[in-house]
Image 1 (tube, rainbow, N blue to C red):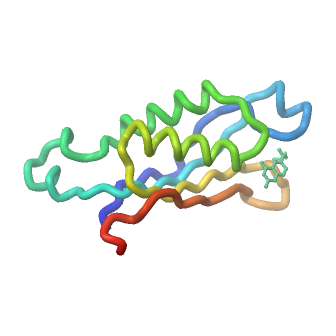
Image 2 (cartoon, rainbow, N blue to C red):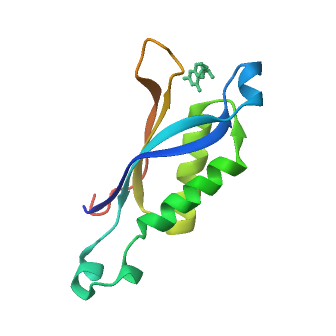
Length: 121
Ligand SMILES: Nc1nc2c(c(=O)[nH]1)N=C([C@H](O)[C@@H](O)CO)CN2
């Protein structure tokens, strides 16, 4: 399975379960692995035949700006559904980290996988 990668993408959004978190924007760091057959694009050297990671990053930025949720779980689930639907992604792994949420930890967050890996029975 081929993957398009996005690592440590920083986005700002309103997120958190506490009242004080409802009034501020906080940074999340995202890692994504997006299943894509890269062979057609590589054969033709053609961006139109692959998943444009710049376009995906731009969409994620817009998603973060437009959403306001309590849980990182909700953010991850809704973002994964949006990307799979809009970009036709068969399978993805998404890690959402919230740095600084727990001072003693470098980051806390969630990792999800959604869809069926291409080539799996
Ligand atoms: N599993 C989760 N636990 C917690 C979350 C969360 O989104 N998922 N959020 C918080 C608070 O918003 C915290 O990040 C504020 O520091 C606590 N636990």
